[in-house]
Length: 217
Ligand code: ADP
Ligand code: MG
Image (cartoon, rainbow, N blue to C red; front, side):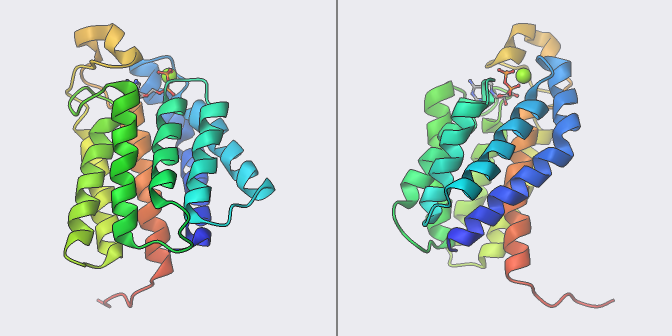
């Protein structure tokens, strides 16, 4: 996957976040302060601008610029957290002009580690980590046996979606939602929901890149 692939992934996230903005904000209205959708929409619009203004020439460069922009532009907790995730992923990819699915899988693990370090959340705390960590595991498993990258990305996206849905019954132990204590149960975590969009965008871009013949009914 080359620089262009990563630019298209960022564009796909920008579009998905724009389309999901109001839904994310509604989720945040239930257990936070109703700004997660607008936070990310502003952040990824700025990422798109930054990439157009200063096009990086490596995949790692794309992710580091995206991360730095999110840290600068997003006021909420999710800005520094996603910013760190993308920066750590970008650093893990280094200067390579082309990266493999296995490289991306280890980069994703580095991204999750960065979020854990910064935010101190573990799985089960009802945060984005509940979607990110299973996605990274699914991706690592998927590329492990030299399998089809597209299948690995699809598995990662499904794992992120499941992880997000599984936050509904949890009680938040990190972030703003934790102020609600037991009252945070019964709602999906907004950050886990946006992680599912971000990993889903990766699945979409990979699927478009290697179109396979669809079986006909
Ligand atoms: P804020 O909570 O500052 O308003 P956002 O609404 O943009 O920021 O983002 C909220 C999301 O950030 C939460 O739904 C959760 O997924 C994530 N989050 C908050 N704190 C942490 C943390 N310490 N570790 C991981 N994720 C966190
Ligand atoms: Mg919020």
